[in-house]
Image (cartoon, rainbow, N blue to C red):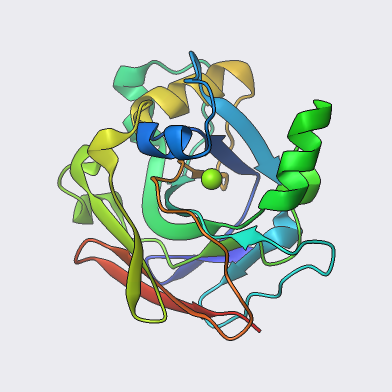
Length: 216
Ligand code: MG
């Protein structure tokens, strides 16, 4: 079982949930329809890498995109929780990348098939360490950035999420159930683009987290 860094402590990783189409500007750039409920997919835990490990591009894709996202750590089981109590289940926040083989995803979408091959390859879930929720005054107004080779490619603010953290946790708790150790990638803003071998990616969560990943 994989372990992840939560405020300096090692904790076990559970499921990796991801929310798609949660920022309107990104929905528009990919010409997708607005979702009426969260779009949910999962990545295998073998997809996860943390600061210090390198991104490896899969040989079956020619177009791997970065998607910079706020990531939430679930510290206690959640089944059928309300939005009001949802935030009590959060054990930390991190910044991460939901790497996506866009060419493969487009092929799968056109056939009506699941996206797993496009989203689940090794190193496709990049993750910083988690900070404790007490360090974040208002998670619904946090800025985050992705710089590639020193240039800002994505900038987001969690205030633009169509489904808030509380809504997502309540929703996932009703439809799937959440367990301690699960993490949730909460969706990406506009600006997604391809990464290449040799690129240096810097992920920033306001003034709280800054981490780097290189592409092998
Ligand atoms: Mg994403």
